[in-house]
Length: 146
Image (cartoon, rainbow, N blue to C red; front, side, top):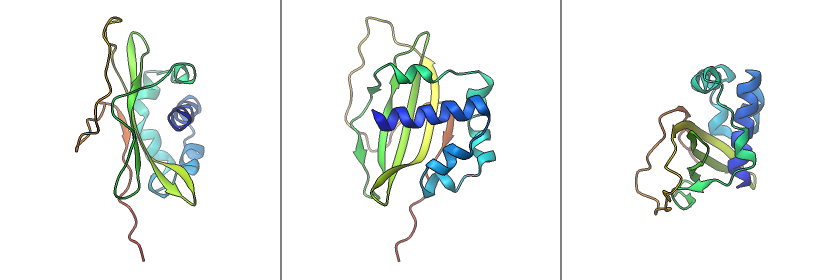
């Protein structure tokens, strides 16, 4: 939960200030391949719509699939926060850097919230994950090992 909240709080601060340099610098090499201007462009829609991500600090995220580490060592977290009237969906990718998980990619968007009585069950990680329709910063391809 800390990794999910950390990424979304960092994005919220960047959206509120228009300054994506801190988010970029806190990320790993994959995220740092994007300039601050590229990150700003990627999240322009969230910023223009004044999407408030601070609800992610108090709500419990609902995972749509079990956290999984790929063969390349990337940790993928996919789910949503049950906000109303639209839920905050996320796909977050972390990469290990010197013993720490660093943000590698981030996809955040809004979708219609499920009816209150509906319950979303986590599902097993599919071979290909679905991505929310929203701002997206994909992780870069892993660097070649020497």
